[in-house]
Image (cartoon, rainbow, N blue to C red):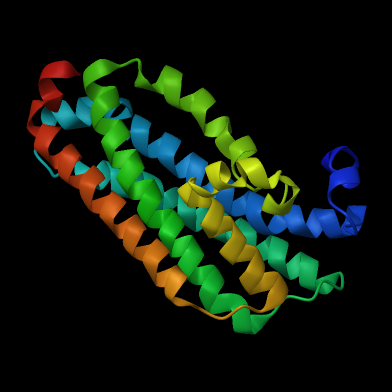
Length: 212
């Protein structure tokens, strides 16, 4: 469907090429989105445990994100192996760039997930806003390249922190791009988001039992 929908705007990308283009970024996007959703729901879903047992509540968020990333990484590896087996050229030299991008997604998922988990515990309606918002994949170059966006509006898309992550995934695996300073900047930004989200979560954590 998307191969036909975007075909007129994607130049020389054939339907088969588009499937490869899509597969490289779609699975990591699902990894991030699922990790955020599971983390956000983790405290409320384990309310009986939080009320009865004294333990660091952050473990619930980390367990949710870690389990999602482990499962999706296994699925992503399978997808990459299938692509390679069917003749797609994937560059091992670009693997470090791809791993840095995935590490950035992990840190972002932990930070955003922790912050939303605290808010969801206190407000309860946050989930109703976040679930539709995660359809922002249409505002992230997952289903299409940034090049099809008119230049007058392209800078707005580049403000999305996930835009650079998806581009580096594709550049690494499909073009063999090696790590650059920008990759470390993205990783550092992800670490900052993780620290902010976790700090916010820990600050509100003592009040969770009163709201569950």
